[in-house]
Image (cartoon, rainbow, N blue to C red):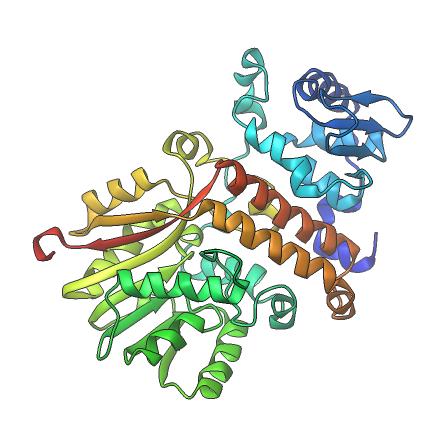
Length: 408
């Protein structure tokens, strides 16, 4: 464990000392994994799992540490054990391929009699990750301000950090432009449109909108992203008003409001505020288009208050909505309603696969920027974990168009 890793992720610097919980975890895991078509190979050669020699292989390198982490924190310990190197994939096994059978069975993998004990392993979302104005700033900095250079090593040249929309064998960048154009089309963005973008990213959507002749205002609370976006606006020769403000602080009136994969960082508590702000800023006859990572409503209800590995290590304060939850918030707190939605889940799986391939291919450059092996394993697990979720439909992503029904 390096000094960098110990300081950044103290939770994996030392193996938990929970022998009783470790024994329980081992007792539960064996019958559970014996219903999954994978091979789990222990350091001593013992094999578990319902898979054969052609199935994805998971190798437990340090069984004692692996079960200790799993026992200490069932939902988070699995990913932490990968970060720590307690388990890895077998030769020739892709990490996403290994995680996919688990994702396919995520709601049923734990035997029914044991599911009633979920209340004892689910941790509530920590208060310090609450998405207040100040809290949102800290949560965004934890991920998006890591390094522009880091993101440039695995994203396409347009620096889009959201699902693409593929048709055929085009490049990732071309698929990202199709995604952006679909959002702009849904929001009716054209020449003279006063457009607000909530969540600038690195500026690709704002550039595209400005090239259509729109009068673009884009907001972000990421200083790193804002700095690079301003450079890209200058290079593209477009006039974009970029503001470093929280969405709750925006004023004005806009014909179109767009937001790509930003609602996941809003937090359930602030969804009414988020959509009320959009409603307040939208001019009569205006249109809204958002792209949102979603999950089925029953899964959202089951997980809305639980704290997982992704929230601890990747997206603090994050929560995925369901389309039903969005409809309910709109109906109860705004004059807006959904007019159309487009699912792109399989496209996100393909996007994530390309990001992970780029990340691994450029690891030596990323490593030279100061990111260590623990970070590599964390990021690899994050990308593969999400890819498995989208490829199996456990999570999805939708482009959602909204307007005021009375205005069409």
